[in-house]
Length: 207
Image 1: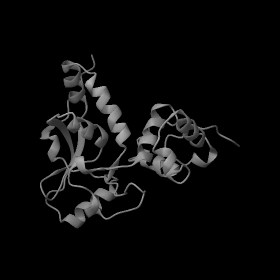
Image 2: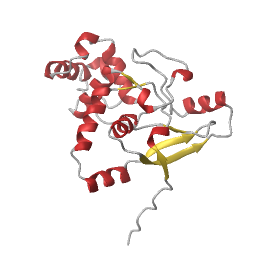
Image 3: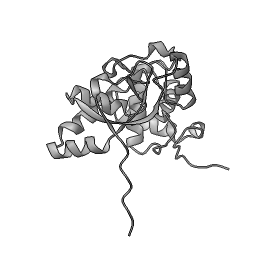
Image 4: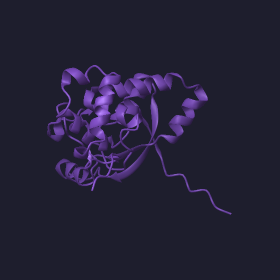
């Protein structure tokens, strides 16, 4: 008889106190997650929180830095959810701040790029999830993945790689008005050969 896998040791934390490890989110994607949350009944919400753990690293300021689920976290905050479960990846509370960021970068636990896709200093990363900037190209990348434009991939921050791909190919005036035409254009680009280096690419393989 197979035994159930042990549940990881989780930490409960106030959502508003969690420190992000990126500068941006796609606000349109956050809005979608908020809408989905409002449609859940209380037991369904409890179940969703029970299975959505926020991976985190304990930093030198004794704060938890989440390394994923920023969109879901912001959606929950805006829906006035107070507490979430954390899965601690590493305790770096005892190291110098410069070492902390070096370790975070080495493990691909931080993405210090702004809404224009430009590399910023680690100090530019906001201290609160609610201060994250909007990157509409990240929203487009999320929308495209949901539509089957590319496959979900374990590569850290893979959606941001797709966002940067579209950033140089679709104008900002167009991406700020999401519609079926925009999605169709993005789908064509995503299936093209020039996108084949991106994680989760599902375009045709050519000899």
